[in-house]
Amino acid sequence: MLLAIDIGGTKLAAALVDHGVIVARRQVPMAADAAGFAAALDALVDGWPAPAQVSVATTGYIDGGKVYPVNRAIISFWNGFPLEPLLRQRFDCPVALFNDAQAAAWGEYCARRDRGEAGHPANLLFITLSTGVGGGLVLDHRLRAGPHGLAGHVGHAPARLASADGVALCGCGRLGCLEMLASGTALARQASAIFRRPLDSAALFALAATEPQAAAILDNAALAVAEAIAGLHMSVDLDAVVIGGSVGLAAGMLARIGTALAGLPLPCPPPLSTAWLGADAGLLGAAACPA
Image (cartoon, rainbow, N blue to C red; front, side):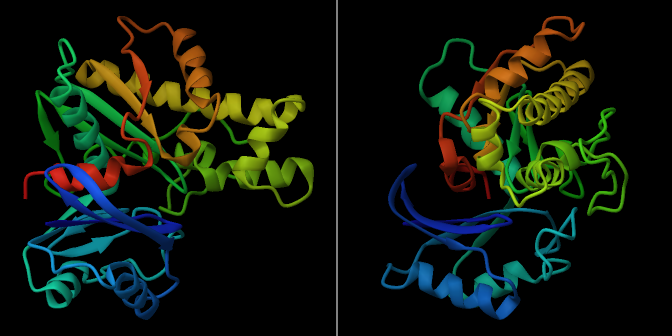
């Protein structure tokens, strides 16, 4: 039995996976510090059998068994956190670490391959729009992580558009990243500034049905995502783009991105789809990734 763990900015999920099928799954909020993280992990696996392997999909990038954030504002204790040693000590079995969006990209690629999709894509981009914005690339049927684990981090590529509230400085230290426009955190920030009351991204989507300003925030975010897709498409020639994450899977977001992409002068635009594996793309992708 394999234990898959998905670590995001706001949630911590774990699943027992048997031959690619989730047989048990639990989820709790992400902890605020290292001690809380260890306790939450213990609670997630309480009563489960000892795994033969642990495969982890985590926000950030991995170097030498430690995990580092790109946006340091998402998880405060994540800069150099010794994730692999902690998990090896806790579970006493092999541990494999992957970026969460890269793992999800592989999971979505495998889902299309294993379901016999005709001409399943050799070159696939996965974009997760969630607490942050992440990405993963499968090129020539191979998952690409890069020598520093950064491949596909589209959320920290520059966007040419301005946010609705004028905020440009990203938690990564750079100006004008896609994450500042299209993440759930960014949508909530912009909505709260424009409507002068606390709003989260779900409330923004609800408002967009009747409020043109709310719809404009979402349309601007969708255009920024479409611009990022176009830039990567012109660099690597994509067969498919998959959109996931809580914001990406929200009603209407894929259509907004599709409309924006169709309006760009882009040769042979790649087809868009939502994540077939839904919120479990990272868990199942980590379980399927080659260790």
